[in-house]
Amino acid sequence: MNSEFPYPGLRPYKRTESDIFFGRTEHVLTLLEKLEKGLHFVAVSGTSGSGKSSVIRAGLLASLNLAPTGKYWRKVVMRPGNAPFTNLAKAFLKDDKSPDQGDLALRKEYVRHYNLNVDSAREHLEKILRISTKSLHKILSNVLPDNHNLLIVVDQFEELFRHTQDELEVELFIDWLLASCEHPDTYVAITLRSEFIDRECAQYPSLHQAIMDHLFSIPCLPPESLPEIIEGPAGIFASQVKDDLKTQLLEDVQKLEFDHRADQLPLLQYALYRLWQEASEGKPDEARITLTLQQYQNIGGLKALAHEVEKAYQSVKPAHRKAVEIIFRRLSRCDEEGQYVRQVATLESLAELTGKNWASIPEVINDFRYRGFLTPPYESNLDSPINLIDIPHESIIRQWERLKSWANVEKEWVYFCERLQERAQSESNKKGELLHGLDLENALAWLNNLKELYETEGQQKAWAR
Image: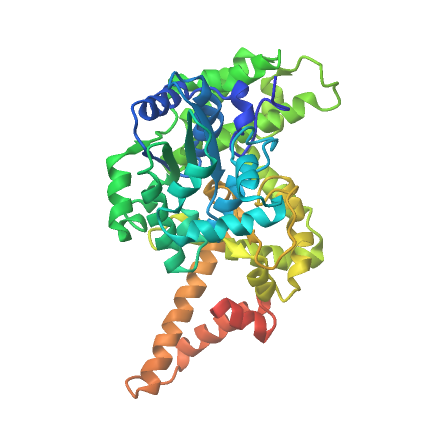
């Protein structure tokens, strides 16, 4: 048994957790078949929280060497973040003993061929990768062992558009990725949220065409897969889910309102994670655990996620409450269509908004990171002002009423600010008049509310940007 717990909560399954990964066998087999047939590019798409990353990591990667392809596989797994080529180079040179990657990368061969130490190899590789879109072809001719294929997984591909500010960097990375697929031993799999396909991806015709030609959509969980997702992991741990609990879980998932259907898997997985915590507390590791309906009711049912994130907020020191609100307002947004979406931010930008030093931001948010409500996880170091902070799932925004309220108010504030700017521009062009009467009262009330949260002029300017 490779897994420490049967249910991962909000985070994706790891490659090493294939033993507790249930309910997606058909999808994994389909992806394996595509690679076996020589398809060099595949785009795995779905809504936020649909399980795309888990299907790739605990499904495809864990099963690949078992497939009858006649070749061994080396795997490079990355997320673009705000530095795609840097992160690609790191993934190529990942430690062979990395717990979530195993025998993935080409570190040993690269360091040996170019006679480099590990510290200098990443910078050297990043420079070579940028030389041309076909740079990988030459690299592999030097370092890819015989009788091997290479699979490059770009997980959460939408980060390329959400995180990367340099448009030329984005275009170069896309061109590089598509050109790398032309190498006979190279395969590329990306995961991305479906709403990015016809929006951001459509701005790059070759990418959009490749995605549309080789799209594999992860559907919402079919009802027939739910029982094994609930019972399978517990069985691996020689534990039990009581029948009345299973029945209640299935009913609650199916009863979710239409607006929350996208949250089925995150809510179920988080409830199961909390159930296991509740049931196993104070018991030895080897104990056989029984999950019961009473325990499920104790954690709040499928509302466990909303309860726990509110509990995390209530435990925040009073001196940090305002900073926490500002940070979560910055990390979330209600868009024009009324959909709640995540917005990534650097420590530096959060520091400007809160009026704090960037190095003090981790202290404010660490409890949320520890509980899995912010990324990167608590174990990761936040040692640079350009470190990125994000909410792992839109489900947190949709389920946590306090954050939904903040996002809605923020949308109103932004709209009001834009109208004021338009009014000021009209007045300066002699096409409008100064505010007066009720308009002036509303503007002053808006400004007072803004100043109550963003107290200094520096904070207010950072918000207005």
